[in-house]
Image (cartoon, rainbow, N blue to C red; front, side, top):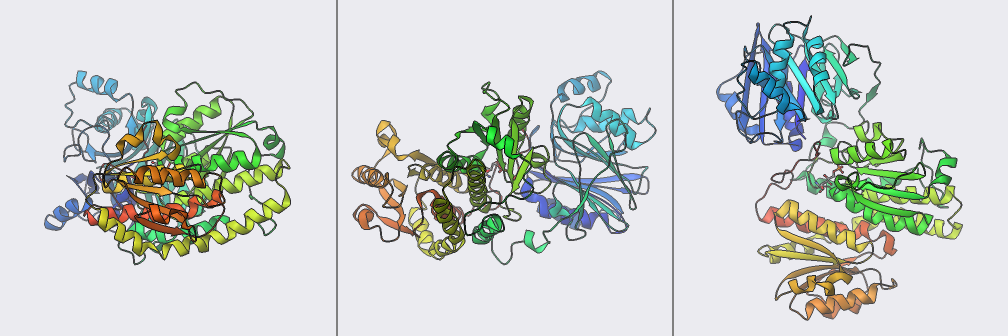
Length: 613
Ligand code: AGP
């Protein structure tokens, strides 16, 4: 959840590190800090608030020139987001600087041990203890890498630790467990970061580090060992994103760019995976046909928006494969003593591939003997690396904290897998498969059509900007869409919003309806068995004074007399409607946040990847 950057090489470390932190600020922005090694000293600066605060200080009080540096943007876990708790943290003699992403779960015990030795801790963070442990370890270890290996062995929890030492110019050392870290391999220079976006303007050659590994960076070499000093072979890969793709591409906001990229993201996720006959090919899917035939239950684990895509996927999976499918909040899953067998397939859906709740849920599932399939948007991230198989979504970098294109592509990837499963088990008739394939092939264009109508959605946002609360109703796959619409409004406009299964209204929530209360309703196609029931739901809330904003298929005039606003959707099968119905809700929330003057790409209290439980 924090942004981490390390550099060693001929460039000015300060410039490289600040540039990298700027590209990673979406990962956390409670504070920022930098440390460089210069003439036998560590020079460090850190400031609460956004990176700009630190940059302002650096422009008025420049740091020394150096070829070795580390930097950090923080999403606070232990200790308030203030200057003292900002990273880097230094040893008492100032010779060691440490930055950290994650949570050290045994830090209280270690803190007490340090205090008993007379060490004075300056901050409330778990990170600071590592600087002091390293300082003590350096008295007995041969060098900094060995000292870090010894200290890392003592830590439990999740950590990416990046360290520099005053006496070791041209050396950056790091250790990782349960937290992302990637090496950027340059020519006579090397980089470390929590995300490739930090260094792809310098190099696209990357090395993903694995669990319990230590990496030693000099300008010429990258050496990787385990925590016990044993050499580890690593795989180098080329990052296909370029720096521009991770920039805003002319839009004011990353979120607007990513909403607009949805047609392409859906098309790219479908590309080469389904043909006109509806035959699905999932290259490299490491699940044997015999295993697929043995599956008798599917459990989807995910968080937030990814959880909502799993709720939608459930309808398609059960409809096409006739396999029971449960959808679980990853943070709840492993604490309910779930029933898992070798014949259970767990699907972990995650845009970042680093969400700790989801990672721990899938680890639990594998310990219980289930296989795990990852649906992920981040190549080489921890969740796919630890899964038995992966289907990558091809949405490209999603920088805005609010997930949009990843959501639509997660739905598409899950649908492809459901069709693949059904076909591998002989369960889909050819006509139906062809029909679905043809419909899927039109969805990118249909999303484009919806994007052409967003001006009207922006007008609705202007009308509702002072609302205190907004409700969202849907049925079947429209229910998770309603939940997603509510989540977007909460996380972007900081408003109370709630999504309901429309059929539940009469069991309590209808008491919330009062004069002028905005209620969005997602209406399925007129041919759907639930269509008339949800039209009745619209009448129920309208009769009690609600202001109804109805999302309905073009040509569906049955809702006209009950709608204060109508948002028209292109015709498509009910199961595919989430791919078009979600888009206006994304735009609505983005516009509400913009009208309120909030930071849409980096909403308060949030981070793009929640790498702590
Ligand atoms: C989505 O708008 C939210 N920012 C959040 O709910 C997110 O979907 C959730 O944290 C899961 O993240 P992941 O997909 O990277 O695992």
